[in-house]
Amino acid sequence: MQTLVISTPQDYIPVAIQAVVALAFVVVVIIASNLLGPKRKTEEKLKNFECGIEQVGNARRPYSVKYFLIAILFVLFDVEVIFMYPWAVNFRTLGAFGFWEMMVFTIILLAGFLYVLLKGAFNWQKREE
Amino acid sequence: MISLSDITQWIHKMLFQYLNGTVAYGAELVLAGVAVIALVVAMAIIMVYAERKFAGFFQMRWGPNRVGKWGTLQAIADTVKLMLKECITPNNADKPMFKLAPIIITVVGFLALAPFAFAKGIVLWDMNIGVFYVTAISSLSVIGILMGGWASNNKYSLLGALRSGAQIVSYELSAGLSIAAIIVMSGSMSLNDIILAQTDGWWILRGHIPAIIAFVISIIASTAEANRSPFDLAEGEQELTGGYHTEYSGIQFALFFLAEYTTMFILAMLNITLFLGGWMPFHIPGLTVFNHIMDFIPGIVWFFGKTFFILFLMIWFRWTFPRMRIDKLLKLEWKYLLPISIVNLLFAAFITLMGWHF
Image 1 (cartoon, each protein chain N blue to C red):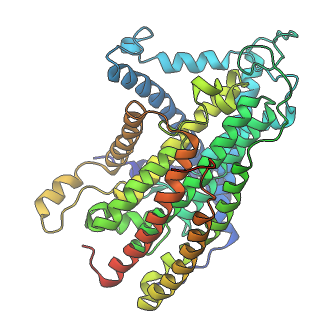
Image 2: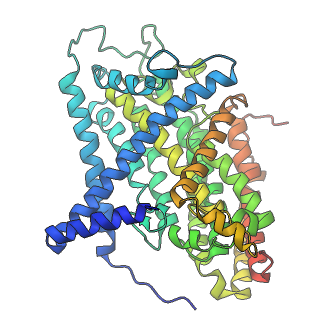
Image 3: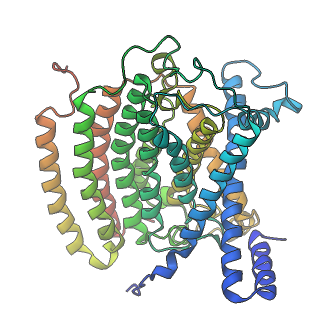
């Protein structure tokens, strides 16, 4: 049987300090580079590079909805993956009960996955081989 | 023999001797943070050199060989050059977001290093949520990439950022599931406990079939998450100029570059901790003499040896496989790796339940 370890906010101090140190490093490097580097700004230089030739139009335009679909599906499935972490940690204490519970959970999850698959959410082209 | 933990204990004693408790504790943490950052920057410089040199050898040429002996100072010279360059923010760009993106991506990269155990007793933050923390923090880097690509106001950058976003979040799933397979076997999320659970043998050997499947999936997912070839569509030079960091110059570009290598390094360390035993020497239960000989090699050597092995694999992939198309890349994840890793997790649970691992 595992002993119950309750973590307190104090346990997270090392991470907070590391965040401060990391941020300080990045800011110092950027400031140092700004002091060291030249500053000669011209009209041409401040234009977008893009692909090397003059920019046509604006980049704020609609893009393929497929990326949005992937993001939504990710949110759905990632929540399920996060559910599996506490189960995984406690698996040895849960034993066979935990295994069959997860079996049921996974079958429901895979049914949803099958639905998404058959709906063609992962096909990027209209006609898939 | 001096081990690394002796040095840290000596520093610990010195600090507590001359300063009072709270200040010494704070100073120790700051020192540890600085040490970790220095380690990552050094690793990034070594990796840039190694990558270019290996690329040269894979293509039957010399690679860098002008600056310093065998070109060893090339990466340092590049770093100095990038420091001395001007940072340009294009007029069209979303300026605050454009400047924030490299900061976020680098800080996130450094933060994810906190729970790793580099050698016996050398761990900055031994926490019971270690693995979970690493996956959570390292997936934040996608925000930096999306911010950079969007703020650049450049169609190619936007496309690269979107591709990268879709790719990282997709491969996050199977990476998370293959990590969960190891958590099931070792029953803890603390990276230190996972390493200690591998005293009698690494999980990849003890956990046999499910662990090997999880390892292969994890390596593929890590390569994709680090935006490495053959999954480097985010930068695809031939089609997108430079991807999400096209508009960045000088130190801001260097920070993106550093973050990319930090991600690679973190994922390599995570993989070896979970599957190859971290700093744990190679042990075969029963062979006492062999185990003792293996124990003579310090943990830090094992750790970095294994890390460099995984990093070498990633470099090797880059010069072996052609780049994939975005739809095929996402199809590989959603249609194959995700169902395989879900079933594999159950399989690993079954093996653990029956006690069929060694």
